Image 1 (tube, rainbow, N blue to C red):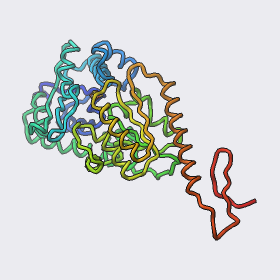
Image 2 (image 1 turned 45 degrees about the horizontal axis):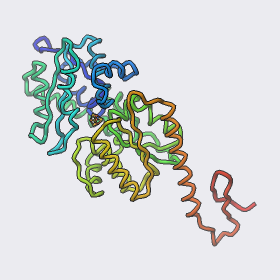
Image 3 (image 1 turned 120 degrees about the vertical axis):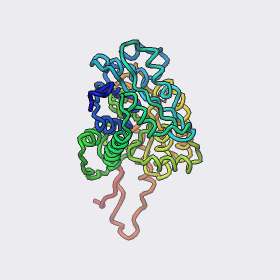
Image 4 (image 1 turned 180 degrees about the horizontal axis):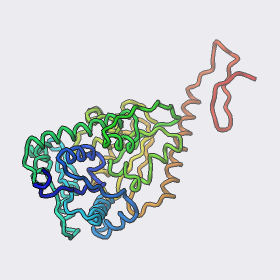
Length: 361
Ligand code: SF4
């Protein structure tokens, strides 16, 4: 069957829509009998290769995307999947760079390869089914039944991945298991002294090189970290409305939506917003989030990243933020502790750096 296809192998850049959609893409292509070639994980070399191709004021994720295309070309890929995701709901738009990704790549990388560039544009009633049919057609597949079966396979893998991730399984573990068709159980919840939600695009946050492994750094500081993977998109959308805001950007659920969800639940000690330098949509969303954080007295720290961001400065800011949250929490605990009435032997001992309730000695 594969011999009839125009291409039997497709390259997928490990960037932008990969981070939210790869389980669907993989299940879809695998079911059609197309071999998927994934670019390597982002490294400094990937970033430098991308930076050489695009103008300097382009945001980091797009530079990284160009770097991944180069990596796939080095691997000998002749067909590369570069979808044009215009809108994900009626008038729920992606930024111009994501909408015009195929055009950007066509204009900055001149090499002998074909882009598989289907369009998803729900504002114009071009939905996922049309997107999948177009993808298959570009690969030379016209069998609609095979496309329908492939879509089901994609959804199955995608849903399995999200269920695992939402239950608290780390991103990479959930992804690896979903691609192997396995399901793993939720680990036992460990109560941590502090909870922080990180708001940011999946392609920034879950790319360990771009985010400088932010999740891991916070976990090492004994912080319970929440991300967009812990919230159902519908819940995030409802929370945006409940906070009195209107969703405009496609990836607003990952920023305003997730922040709104946790601010309304009153469940977190602080928020870290991670965004790329020069990103227009993020600058608007982070301002909006900061406004609501102020209303609810929840501290927020905004980390902007670009190709020059150094790890040392990053760590210093994270540690200072965590330190401030610990001190704030101690003050609140101290204020809320009431002197016991029924058991006068119990007193509050305030030691140099910890507040605790204990027996009189
Ligand atoms: S949303 Fe921002 S970070 Fe993402 S591609 Fe657009 S400009 Fe770049």
